[in-house]
Image (tube, rainbow, N blue to C red):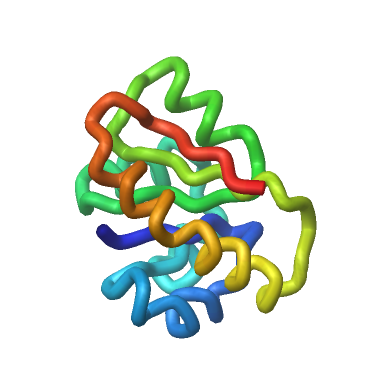
Length: 110
């Protein structure tokens, strides 16, 4: 499954995590960096992305509208790109199980 990284996360992650999550993308590279959450949500839904974010906006949207798209909420605070990579890699198996689980729409990672 491919991930769509929100603007609050470095776009460099897509290349650094390509071995784990190929075909992932970033809102900046899709010219969606300044788009509102509704547009990003719809893009992710139409293109089979899981949204990865550090804020609650997409989680709250998933409570209202359900899923897809699924949301991975990084609750590790503002960290360096290296630390975020470590968190995602450390939780790789959990992320893959979450993506396959048809009953859960949001995964919180600390």
